[in-house]
Amino acid sequence: MTALTKLFTPFGIGAMKLKNRIVMSPMHTDFAEADGSVSETLHNYLIARAKGGAGLITTEICTIDGLSPYMPCTVGIWDDKFIPIFRKLTDEAHSYGAKIIPQISHPGPESLAPFFNGNQPVGPSPQLAETTKQMCRELTREEIQKLVVQYGEAASRAREAGFDGMELHGAHAYMLIGSFLSALRNRRTDEYGGSIEGRLKFALEVIGSIRAHAGNDFPLIMRISGDELAPGGRTIRETQYIAPILVEAGVDAFHCSAGSMPQTSWRIMPPTGTPLGINVPLATALKKVVDVPVMAVGRINDPRFAENILQRNEADLVVMGRALIADPDLPNKAAEGRFEDIAPCIACGLGCSGRKFGTALTCVVNPTVGKEKEMAIVPSPQSKKVMVIGAGPAGLEAGRVAALRGHQVVIYEKESRVGGQFHLAAVPPMKQELVKVPRYLATQVEKAGGKLKLNTEVTPELIADFRPDVAIVATGAEPLVPNIPGIDGKKVVTAHKVLAGEAVIPKGNVLVIGGGMVGCEVAEFLATPGDNPIVGRTAVTIVEMLDDIGLDMVPEVRVLTMQKLREDGVVIHTSTKVKEFLEDGAIVIKGD
Image (cartoon, rainbow, N blue to C red; front, side, top):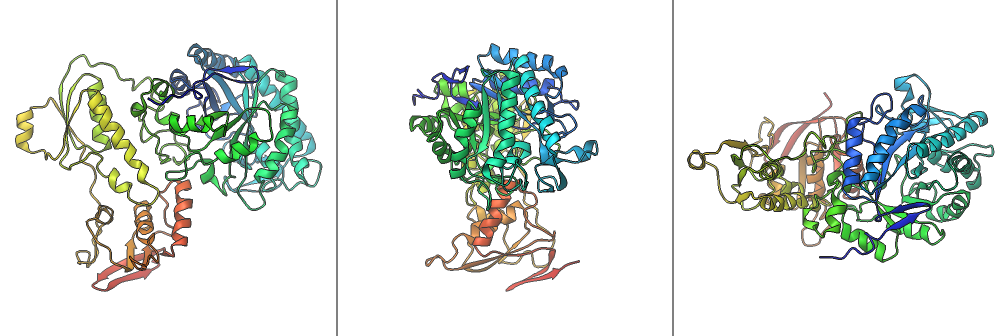
């Protein structure tokens, strides 16, 4: 067992004392009620993470102005009516020993008001907000002063509601404070712009208002980009300059992220395959210039890795977001040394950061997200014989839950290993960590009392011999093969066979039909050798019927994949159909 001595050492942020150094990141869920109230679903979701052992829970953004919603289901803190509902949340979180704070913000240019009430988004300067494609109106000095007061009043409500402090969103050249702080958004020529000191003025006034309304002993954390990582954006050196000024104004700790929206959104929500602890060096640089705690965030999904960051004094606390979506009990399991029982976050983004607009938070690894009470595992009143056919992720999860409920579970798999098509998904570059999921699930099935039978194909005779009360078919999907003339040619193979190593692709020209996620990842896989002197040059071309490629990919993954395809010289033809496969090529049609 690895001793996590620093991770589970109590720590203080101002007047707030934490039982450990694990902080849950603020993440929008779309669980709130339409009027801005914390719903029962959101309440249960947050409490599950408090019960799971996190030292500090940060709620998703709570907006200060009801006329400027951030998302379809935005949590509000603009009115006293929210205080009793928040109080119920904070009281229960405290009963589990967790501290809890709201992230307070105004969406500014990111406001979705035009879609709800016709109000135009506001910001430091008039411009098109790249995230919403809405024109932003420049705030007047009088409007700025009104907003400064609104921030302070929101902080006062947070204190009255029993929160232990608050987080102020000032990162990613995003939302109101972040856009004022960044030259990427702030092009004002008055005292609120024109220089780094001018861009800092609004944030300093907001901090002053928070202190005036909520008191100097109400802990204030500020989320900030250590480096905006975009041409013209703030660098780490400039952040080191403004951080001590922010501390002097009243900031008690920094939550150090990186990047800007949408230019480098993949650094804000780093996807599968990006370095662990990707923003830690920026947090370390920030620690050198301030005497308040600094939190590091970004792909910190393993408690042993988190301990390493703390032991090396690279940060004072670690912020986990998606890791606590995947497993709310991660802190408790880590404290007990039960590392193999922690459901792994694979940073896929499919149910969280990359979900469709307006849909509620989900998780590929944890189906109970947003259904913490409804899907609680309870013993079954009657034990049954359960046969599961297929040991991919779906079959393993079904077997795990059934076994935990007390059923007699046997999972049959015709291959020699569990995991199904997850093994194929893990072959393209940067995707190897996907195999963590079937490994975790197989371990949990056996711990729950289920049995795994590999190299066993299910036949009618086997079913008759086993005599199950319930049979669950989880055999996975088959690849779709289009009906194109020549599709049966010797040189035409499916992506599945390429990734499984069943088809040898020689050097030369390769045509990939279909530019969705699978096609893009196969193209990247085949193009990666490039000019390898042993393999030889592989020239890859993608043909896609639609007018763009990678449209089914999580945005942050797509950005990195497109960058890699360009670097590898992959040729892309969109709005193009394959008419026929030939022995030495294919006939394609451009356009309709």
